[in-house]
Image 1 (tube, helix red, strand yellow):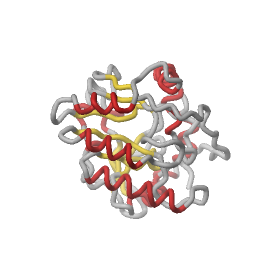
Image 2 (cartoon, rainbow, N blue to C red):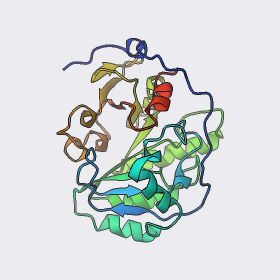
Image 3 (tube, rainbow, N blue to C red):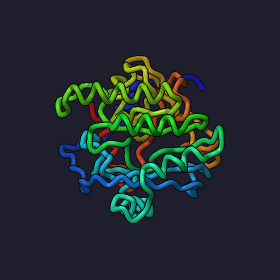
Image 4 (cartoon, helix red, strand yellow):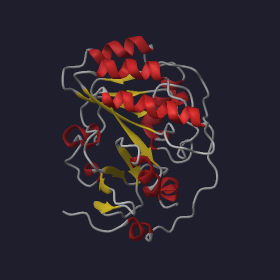
Length: 263
């Protein structure tokens, strides 16, 4: 299948009013326990290791914070809350040792909930470097809403430091996908040269091209019951050459759709 259609036609199907407010982090804590599930039972992830970080790592810059995040509902919400409160998980150094104990070439997802180390909008570069180093020989991947491009609400020095931290980790073989709020935002993120994943409007085709000429492939696992992260692996490939799109899903999908349809 080729890349057909452009974002304007994709956005034309949106009929959801935009959001006007974004909630702050509901649990502003410095808790650093991380939980590692060695074999996920999530049908879309497949049987690979997945980690969970406390919600204190989620940046206020994320428009889905308390406003449609898929991790804010169901069994994952319960698990995430217990990790965030320190009832589950292990200290950072123990978590790193468990990552190092994963088999060579093991595909694993960091953060089925939560974000990169560091409270709020700021990345803790030292800890991210430790994680990237622990991942060597394995195929870890994750996503981040920590701001890496200019935004009025985040100091420029934080944005620049975050971008350098992500680039360093990706260069070490730990794939970090920059999370786009919509297609327009994804185009801006793509200019960094880093891998990008973004939410796309409901009804978006499986493949399309953005106004800036970037190719988008919608998550194959969302299109087929026989494909999982374990078999797809697109998000683990930093040099894939296209943006991965995610259709809004979960109980907050209407709120996510509003952001995906905004400009």
